[in-house]
Length: 530
Image (cartoon, rainbow, N blue to C red; front, side, top):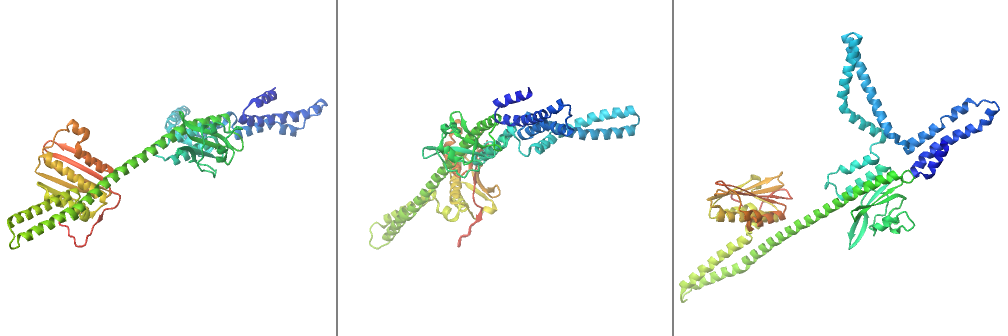
């Protein structure tokens, strides 16, 4: 009856269970067949040789052992883990309890006291050893199963990386590794669907043993038809080795890619293993979709930041070009005109020389005004001698007292042209606001380095009246001046801070990262006076 039941179950079982039943059935059939061979001898009164019984008896046990250790019959590995853990703890704690109890009994004396001491100390030791139980169990699990968890336990590895910390390629490698360890597949690969020239293609981004990784046009229908007679040749060409499963990675109706797994030890994957892969595929699809969206968002932010940087750089280039045109064009013409009028006024026989002299003075005033205009557009001292020299030049022309504090290591230093222009015009905008709104008599401009000389901080502090809070409109927009400063700094990855106290003035702090080390600038023939 037992053999008939096993045969009937074998007919309707899936592949893995058939392998498990096969070994049990083989051992039982061999035992019955050998016993049937010696049955006629028993009828004739001849006893069965003891050696036959010794060989026949363990056959079902051997078949069960093969099914257990090779195909996980009855999931005995879970029972084995708990048995090993329990036995280890029993041995360690028993040895400790017996030793402690014996020592206490000898020290105190008397059988009753020794028994009481053993019970009390056993309870105390059990409580004390409980915290290390988890560590021992984890170590035994690693010894029994290997360094990687199997089955649903492998899913915990997908939650280890913090979202946004792994690039998509590294994330795909992790997914492929988890899928391979979960079902014991011979290989795994993850393919990501991407848009190329208006077409959606897939490319290999995970672990795989296939050599063909060129992007191909693979859709959901190709994945659904995998394994059938109507399977797509494109998908088959991607997988140069026999695959045990191909699962789509999709979120809602969006196909993110697909997961391919090889067979396990030359056999097909079981229904339970396919179910585990389906769970992994659902989680992997969400992780990959989110990772791809984060990468696209970072790319857009980088493009936006670079676009703002190019815009600010272009504006500064236009400022420099306009300053150069004014200096080399209109300014030179005015200088030449003033010189000619002054020479004419000094010639003999010229009528109305006083008026010519007055016109020459007006032309020179126009030259000075043109120089101030050009200096405001883009000062030549900023391009020639750097940020610190330009700030000192501005301090000499400011109609109020200005103190400039520069970190010793920054005096005479040069930075990238965009950095110098950014901080200079931020300082000019801040000083303009101070003159208009602060009602102060003095202002302090401080230039410092930060973050191990990988950044600069420019602070402008006035001794004006300050105020309690910004007006509502000022909080929303910050005014065009403040917004211009923020935009300039943000284009280079910097930030603007603003703080004010009634009666103590206002602090405007601009911080800006720099990509290169701060190097002293030595210009032949130029001596900076600080």
